[in-house]
Amino acid sequence: MKYVQAFFAVAGWTILLGASAVAGDVKVIANPSVKVESISARELKSLYLGEKSSINGTHVEPVIERRGPAHEAFLRDYLGQTDDELQKYYEALVFTGRGSMPKTVSSDAEVVAYVAKTRGAIGYVGTGASVEGVRTLAIADSNGGERQLVTRVEPKYPLDLQKRSIGGTVRLKVFIAANGSVDHVDLLGGNPILGESAVTAVQKWKYAAANSKTTMEISVPFDPSR
Amino acid sequence: MYHRVLGLIFVSLCLCQAPMQAQDFKLFDRDVQIHGFASQGFVHTSDNNWLTMNTSGFGSGEFTDFGANASTQITDKFRIGAQLYDRNLGGLGRWHPTLDWALATYKFTPWFGIRGGKVKTVMGLYNDTQDLDFLHTFVLLPQSVYPTDLRDVTLAHTGGDIFGDLPVGNRFGTLSYTAYAGHRNDSPYGGFAYLVNSDGGTFNSFGGLQYGGDLRWATPLKGLLVGVSRMNEDLTLDFLIAGTDFRLNSSSDWTNQYYGQYSRKKLVVDAEYRRYWTDLGTQGVSMIEEDVRGWYVAGSYHVAKRVQVGSYFSHYWLNYPISGLLSSGTGHDYDKVITVRFDPNRFTNIKLEGHFMDGYGLPDQYPNGFYAANNPQGFKPNTNALVIKAGVHF
Image 1 (tube, chains in turn cyan, purple):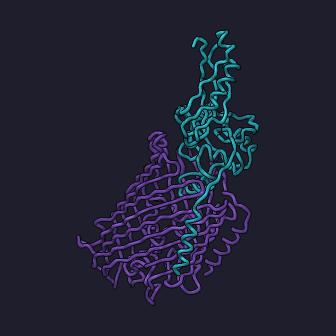
Image 2 (cartoon, one colour; image 1 turned 180 degrees about the vertical axis):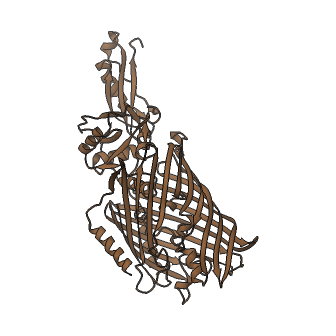
Image 3 (cartoon, chains in turn red, orange; image 1 turned 90 degrees about the vertical axis):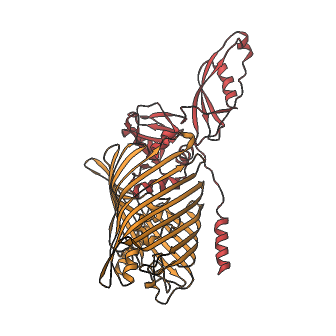
């Protein structure tokens, strides 16, 4: 019998190893009654875990998707949980009297439709989804939009512009992965040639790792006198 | 018997259904959610009978439970709800439904809320969810810390809680607290009553004031949670032996629990330690002292989306030093467990579990899954058990 026990014990503990990953990207949407333009990743997590139920005094009702790439990406990037963990979390709340099961729908289109018609609703969809009738919220980092910059690459000043004393500031939106690398950069404003140079440099920047993916808006100055 | 058959039929029917949904309806313009669960188990043991069932022959299917709840959010911050629960586990529960919880909660802010009514007690990792089979990899949680025959002792209190998540800064994780006070009242179909009644006595009541708290820290290290719980009690045990009424009061009764959990992707590792101390007596004379210490280390892993495997080692040790009413002694139960869980869909699960136990506690003196009344032939030192359970929830 001891050999049988030993076999089961070794087999059980040996199998407790492994990993997996999923891929995807999402945007967060809200009913127009939710009067905010952006939300921090931490706030978003608190809303979905039932720790908070309002933003700026407006009651907020989160909506989740049953499955799909947007759902997987949202769980990974903003909640840091697997679907199984999230379900168990909600079920523990529901069956101990501490919370409700959030509204669950099956597709991006259903999320958009529900959020559009429901006051206070907030949801997530894939980046390619049509978001007519809802507000798209920017996601700011939980530390007021700041993440510590670890590696900075200075942008190259285009020589023609510098010779002509053309400078200015470009504004960029930086999408930073949880591991600190820059996913991509959007040019928000400023000289497009300077902007192109800034985007190329910022894409090589490295930030400190965080619990989730974040976005930041930054300004990059170009001073022709320097 | 017909209850068992009905239970089996119900669970089987549910398992054959397409995925079920929670039932929502409107009442006075409020959304009301209805949720429920049911499970049916079977236990076979190699030697000693276990958990008040006759498990050592063919086995026993007297292992059924179910519950249902309704809840609604009255306002942004105020919610109410209630849950009924019923079980039959050998000589425990006996199909007598209980109000599992019924409470009203008002959350002023994320860091301060209150709830009152009959409230599930937050203690350790799983005290408040120990009946919710579908949340756990294992059929039976480690019995050294979560003894199913003594679930009444810590499960819920009639009183109130304050709770919240303290803002300690993003870099320091999240600190959650609960403090509570209320009244505990053991079921006449629980483990203490079963022990008293099967020893020739008549159980009247066991309960009293219960207060304590829980502090848990979701650390900055992703997936790592640590915590500590404390419970103090002021109890009275009332029972008859040979026509004489005994009322024993606790002069000291407390529980400390320390716990940690680490989860990373498909792996979850838990560890908990609980020590329970009580000193019951009458007129200042100590008659029953118990020092119960239990700990376990458990791991579970998702080998596939719907398949989990798990294993734990559970260590139970009891010291019963005072020989007032009963004789003194020590006892232990070391349990090695391996489990496979399969979820055919999101709402159903089937579990297969093996237990390899060394020891059986002190069955004549303190409930620990093994009872002399179920083992008139005496106890053998080791017990192996096969446990199968199927459950459904919505």
